[in-house]
Length: 131
Ligand code: HEC
Image (cartoon, rainbow, N blue to C red; front, top):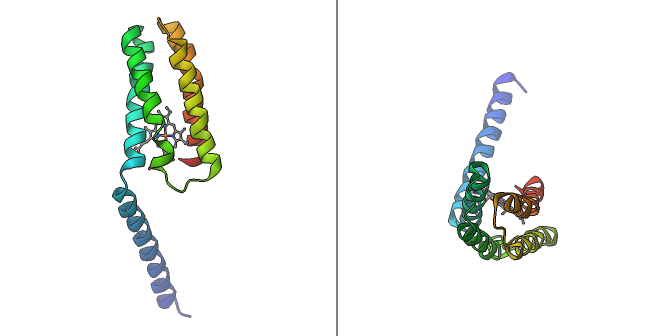
């Protein structure tokens, strides 16, 4: 095989790979749920950690963010249809952590930081494996 045909084969492979990536992106964008669920949770987690950083932890607002996180987390399994059992277990761990955080009903930043630590851990342990 000469260099020219080797180059053409390589070019074909690269174009094929690019095509696959585009196809996967197109498929992904057809189901906006995973992105939507995660973005909403990201928003509320961001607001909570921002509150801790700014040392302004209004108990009512905190409670609101926690409740929204909790209800959104209930959509994870549905947003990722066909996910393996281990993934579903990770989602379950997040819900347990959120239930604990809601029940802790943090009234100040120190309590909030303690309450969201297990939640943050649950987000990260799933991301490490599946994101
Ligand atoms: C059960 C697994 C799991 C848990 C738990 C989980 N995530 Fe995710 N997250 C994912 C996966 C998978 C992706 C990549 C999704 C994609 O690319 O469509 C992701 C992506 C994200 C993204 C990027 C979204 C985007 O598409 O740009 C954010 C933000 C995010 N997660 C926030 C969170 C927060 C905050 C928590 C915890 C409150 C959390 N996630 C818990 C699995 C999880």
